[in-house]
Every structure is written in C-alpha cells, then in structure tokens.
Length: 224
Image 1 (cartoon, rainbow, N blue to C red):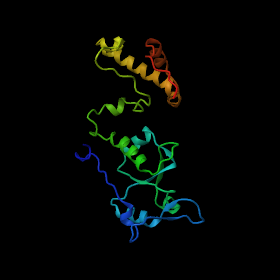
Image 2: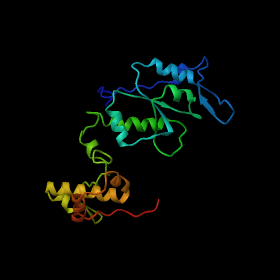
Image 3: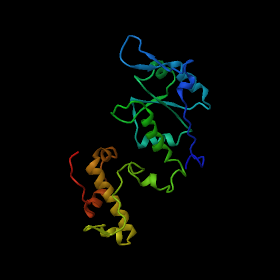
Image 4: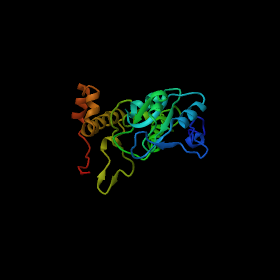
C-alpha cells in the first residue's frame, strides 16, 4: 500500500544485468580458497547507473548492528541503497571505494543479504509518515520512542478459560490505564531486556513508584 500511494519508492536491481556476456558476476578468490566472490565491475556499473546517487550500505556480519534507532535514522534520510552479498561476499575494492557503511542484522549466517535487506526495508518503511494506518503505532511499539519493550495487550472476551483481562483495562479510568501500561512496559523491559533500562540510565523515581503500584502480569517461565 505504501508503494501504491507513493509513500515509498522501492526499486530492485539485478546485478546480472551488468555482468559479462554470460551474465556472470562472480569469480574465484585470488590466493585460493573455497567459494566465489562478487566481481567489482558489475557492482560499480549497477550503482553508477542508478540516479540519483544514494548512500550505499552492504549487508554484512561485520557491519553496524541494525536496531530501531538505526531504522529511525534511515527513515529520516533522503534515501539509501542496499547491496546484498552472496557467496563469499564482495571484492574488497567495493567496500573500500563504493560502500558508505555496512549493516548487520545480528550474529547469524545467511546464504545472502536479501532476507536481511527485507528486514531493513520493512523496519524503515513503516516509520515513514502515512505508511501505517495508525501513525501512533511506531511511537508506542517495542523499541519505539520510549526505547522499551511494549506492554502486553488484551482483547475480547474479557474471560477465556478462566483467564481474565486485568480489571484496570476494563475500568474506563484512562489515566490509570496509561499508568498501568507504562508500568507493564517497564516490568517487561526489566525482566527481558535489562540492557535497555541501563542504556536509559536506569529507572527514575517515578518509574520505580509505578512498578510498586502495579504488579507485573504473569509471564511463562519456559526454557528455549
């Protein structure tokens, strides 16, 4: 929908269109070694054919860890390009002379950068004004402006198999509901991602009082 409404301009380019006469874009490694490497010529040709030029990021395990803050920065930029690696990666001259930065989605090995690129595009595009039906969602969701995990949510029925929706959410007291939600977001973040709390400089006195006012809702203690 965002593409149809021209909120996002997303284009995919096939490096093979810039390969040799047989559309080949890879070759063996100098010095020997397993696997193949992207040649520099088709990558430079593909990038230089795209106008206007945008910052180019290589999806790579050695890059900056992609997170919500990074997505927010990209969403506020004038645009960017992503280069998806394959095989053993790309000729280092591409990294040295063409790439503006590298992005990593975590300590995991993939066959190529396409899945990682989809993650980056999805996380960034949804932050663009008008991309989502509810513009408040990117603000209130996990890792949003609050830099905390999101609070738990409930819907109808009010009682299911003996499990009830917390009474405060059915009370109609909107101020109390907001305090409860804030407290539950804090509880969940302290429980599951204490590093996010530390990054914020710890809990404030107001937040500590909220945790005392509203106990944490139950969470399962199941081993992975």
